[in-house]
Length: 246
Image (tube, rainbow, N blue to C red; front, top):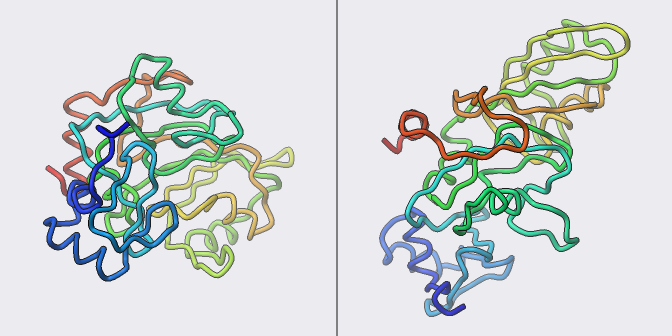
């Protein structure tokens, strides 16, 4: 247990936020929270595999020897490290596949959402992937109730109010329409909680099914549902280049 505990300034520096001195300043200024509690003690220790650490409200992750996996997430799997209700998680699935190091998902997919998910222990990569500043594109295939009009597509692409937040411009393409539902492809570069479902619901079209096709320009068409594998050297190099980590 103790070997997994590290000082908060080391954790923050290892997440790519800057030097330990700069990270100590974040702590002393009251900008750091661990599991929702403000931390001001520089001797405070955290568990990189379990504790939720935020700086100015943004979650940060400790960077160990880099491992980056890709999973084609099945429905019914919780996208978290652990689950208080005992439900099966994406980390349970990676362990079943033989990947036993401390890992965490990059961003979230809802329990009923399927598709491409990155899983890593690389804090700096995770921070870049989920921060809106880096405009990481994610492409989804979505089925919604009702027949969507061209004007609704334009509305979605321009940005919609999903409850106190206006979404950024995106691209939407209708694939099939009729028989009471519409199949679409939507590409976004941000990731608010349940964003796509909230976007379509705001236009009167509840989501029936949602699948992430690609992330960061990588689609992994060889990956069957439930499968997990490391990124190839070329895939990881391309991904890191796109988020400025090459």
